[in-house]
Length: 383
Ligand SMILES: Cc1cc2nc3c(=O)[nH]c(=O)nc-3n(C[C@H](O)[C@H](O)[C@H](O)COP(=O)(O)O)c2cc1C
Image (cartoon, rainbow, N blue to C red):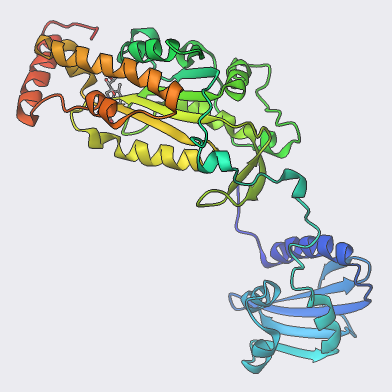
C-alpha cells in the first residue's frame, strides 16, 4: 500500500537524487549541514555529511559547518529553485547560521536534480511524416485491422467492415484482420517492467497470445482499430489490448506534437485509423471517442488519417425500409477502403454517404423500440 512519505523519507529521496547529480558535478566539498525542518508543528533534526557523497542522518551534530532552520516546505522550495535563498533569508523563511558559503556551494548547481541524466540515445523527435503524412502520401503495403468487437465475426462491426475491406483489397495493399476476441490476452498489471526494460519485455510474454498480434501491429503500415461503441468509448477487449502496447514506449518523455509523450522503441512510420459503429442514432455519440483517438494519435506518434463513425448500425441492418440507404452506405464504405489506401484520407463526399443520418429522431425511436420489444416478447436471443 502506498503511504504518504514521512519527512525523513522525503529527505532520503531528495539526497539520493542530489547524490547522482553530485557525483556527476564532482563538487569536491567536505563538511556537514544540520537541518531543523518543521512540518505540521514538529521539528525534525537531520544532518548531512558532505563528502564525495552526501549522507543523511537523523539527529543533531555538535559542531556542524552550517545550520539551516526552516519549514520543510520552504526548504523544498529552495531545493527546487522556487525560493531564492536571498528572498528566503530576507523573509525569514530560511534561517542560517555558520558557514553559509558552504551551503551555497552545495546548493549552487541550479540543475542539481536533472544533471547526470543523458537520454539522448532515446530521442524520438516529431518527424515530418507525423506532421503531414500526405506529403507525399505513400500507399501502405500492409494494413492490419484489429477488430475489437466481442461478437467477432457475428457482430455488426464485422458486417460493416466487410465492404470497407473489399475496398482496401481492391488496391495493392496486403490486408489482414485480427479478431481480438478470439485470442487470449492477459490484462496489463501496470508494473511498467516492459517500459523500464531495454528490450520492452513484458511479464506476460510467452503466457498469452498478445505478442503475435503486437508483432503484426509493429510491422503494419496502417493500423485500423475497428469496434462497436461501448459505454461511449472503445470495448474492453480493445482497451485491454492497447494497454499492453505500452511496451512500445520507453519511460522517457520527449517533446511531441502539441504535447509531451514517451519516446518509442520502434520508430517506424505508421498511420492509424478508427472505424466504429454504434446503436444510437446521433453521430455525436462518437464525440468522446473522437477525442480519445485524437489524443492517442499524439501519444502513439501515429497520424490518425481517417475516422469512420457509423451510428444506428442495428437499425439500418434490421429495418427493411432502410435497405436502399444501407446499400448506399455499404457502397460508401467500399469507396472509403480504396480511398484510404490510395490517398490516405476519405473524401468528404464518401464520408457524407457513410455517416448520413439514418432517420428522423421520433421515427427512429419508435421503430427501434418496436424492434427490441418484439425481440423481448419472442424471447429471441440473437440480433
Ligand atoms: C456493453 C455495451 C455497451 C454499449 N454502449 C453503447 C453506447 O455507449 N452507445 C451506443 O450508441 N451504443 C452502445 N452499444 C451498442 C453497440 O455499439 C451496438 O450494438 C453495436 O452495433 C454492436 O456491434 P457488434 O455487433 O460488433 O458487437 C453498446 C452495446 C453493448 C453490448
